[in-house]
Picture 1 (spheres, helix red, strand yellow):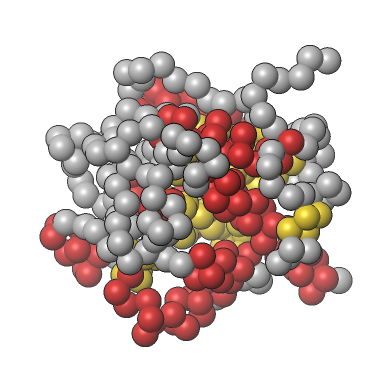
Picture 2: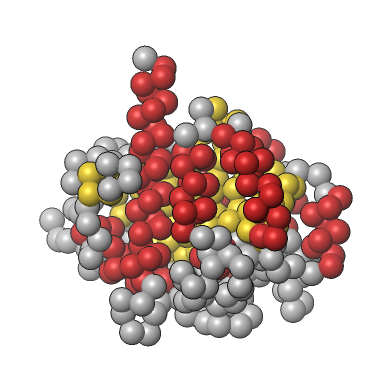
Length: 300
């Protein structure tokens, strides 16, 4: 059997999809960026950098040589000028037959989240999207575009999803009004986190039902990941981000459907931030695996 020409995450040979505990899906789409460019190369850079990570994860004690079993799918490709709805349809086509598996999307611009979410579930009115980002992404149109990296959470909210937004520190006046008055939106602004941190962690621990995590790398402070299209100061620290992931993974009533890491721009001179972005993906997989084991132990 011929080996695929794209890297496998962590350099581990993919198991069959039926045997996989998690499936990684590269989504190299970039059509609506409005400032820094390069997110199309994000998935390949994350996969390439992951080859340099240790397989043993010291915080969770997860050893990726044995568990969890991973399957890295071929990228969902696009050509320049591909209309976003066509790309969404391509993502949905890949994911609908793989529902029930934990999916990690590797972006690509943030708009890919729309297709990923619709591919994973029809239960949108039950779904909570945990949204880590510098930007609210709730504007109705951005620069005249209905489909944009800056409108993606608005479009998902309009579908009935609940939003739990964390680290927001850049938004328009109209988005702020929606955050303050719109139903199904809870926002923890960056400037509030110091005094609302325990409230946030408690909300994450008490989530119920299906959940999807979308992590725009500009949620983190640019001292950690400056390689993104629109970095903003006063972002999440690495320990804060890990505590969020841990709380979500250990929520006893959550059905964690999947996650994505988006808006990463490869560093021009590796290693740059590529290793950090790959480490984020590894951490999501490790925390999720630990949470599953805790849930199994509690139910036995």
